[in-house]
Length: 143
Image 1 (cartoon, rainbow, N blue to C red):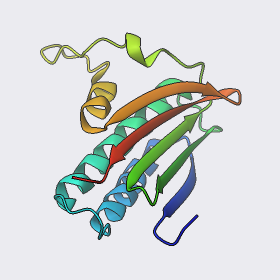
Image 2: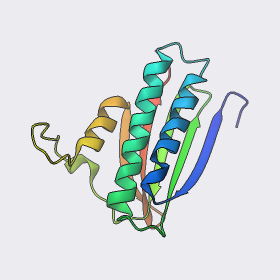
Image 3: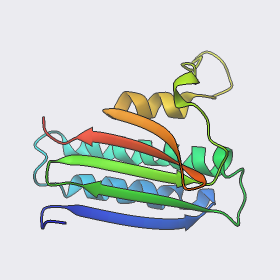
Image 4: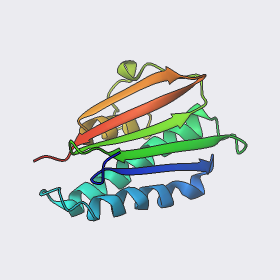
């Protein structure tokens, strides 16, 4: 890893009380990115939002609110100015491409998190890995 790279590796219990902590870590990373010449406040808000949504999905859906499970979040920024966020879960998985766009008029909010994540990040994929799953989101920091 070179001196311009950032790597954050966090494991938290499968509980919603850690949502704001993880979101704020994403925000703080964005605010400190000297090499990002876009709007850092907007990037900070977007990272908080995608991290929170990804955590909610992992906690409630993948890990089925099981307090004995963990959620693993890995954030890295490479020397190529690409931000990568990986959220690992221990659920059964799903095909991210089959999630329909949400019905914003309906009271049920199913599918909104994935919709938000896909609209704010450059690439989003969800794959099986080592008996669990990983949601991988990338964002180019070059404007």
